[in-house]
Length: 428
Ligand SMILES: [Zn+2]
Ligand SMILES: [Zn+2]
Image (cartoon, rainbow, N blue to C red):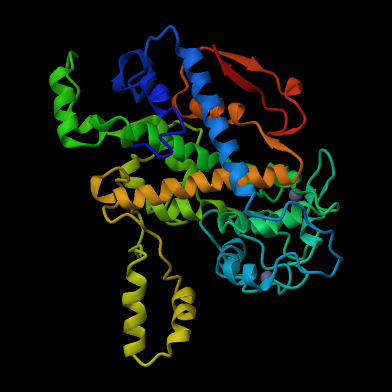
């Protein structure tokens, strides 16, 4: 069963697409292609509206878990309290290290702006936990100004989202001097990636995996054999080509969710689920469809990636060597022995033996989408879900047969968070 199957009309979306290997009509591309269905536009919009309603309804329930309003705090007050700080501490250390690490393949990152050292190990300071990082300025046409010493407001914001620290985020959003809508899609020469991309990459993975799941002929041996018996194609599809991982849409999603980016804290959960380390994937635009490496090879170009269940085993080993228990997490952290892989069967998220991890991951993706919506509304803006979903479907399976109408960016209501000067679409 697809995730949230009672609330989201997955069947309507899935039944409008068919997996085709090496489609002659599409330059030998393998992907899910739209079927000839006269009601296509209407049905896809039905899906988009149904999805939007499900997120919004779940957001209302989630919002009830937090105070209905927040006080304005003083300039020295902590917006990120000790409990929240302890939950996000390791992720902050990891992304600060990643941003300021010494020479990397292809580029030289700038050192820590506070210690001037490569490999920043600064903890969150009281200033980082105050209102300061959120007093962002958008100098129209130039760069977003990041007022806090580490200039890492976008990464810090995304970290709070990943850890579901919604109370802290709503408190930040409620401050009149905070302007976090600027970092939804920031324009900045440093290359910071906003929380809009956190939402979009999650949405793409969530939709792609749920729809692929409804095509068992692309991952289940029995369903595949049955499908091929009924297929009237000449020459027939080879069994090994009937594989969801060979679809262009899946490859684009994987590239987007596991890309190597200096400001990529929002990709950590996806990299961990798909088992692609921060240095393992190819560094290029995910929209670029030029085949570089077959997807099965982009996986596992790297050293052994610890499973979450490996950590207690190694901790026990360190203890046997005489290391005090409380030091073990620190040692593992320094050795970057952090869980990087969740799937027992690597590189095959839909494998039946991975179903438990898949279920957990999809549940987490759904929570992230709901959290993004709750926080967006906390800033007084809205996420235009219909616009986001139609765009996502086009990113995954967009071909000319998918008839659409452009909605120009200047007619899209300003109350919506969107990419600057990017049009939307409506299926017809
Ligand atoms: Zn630092
Ligand atoms: Zn800049």
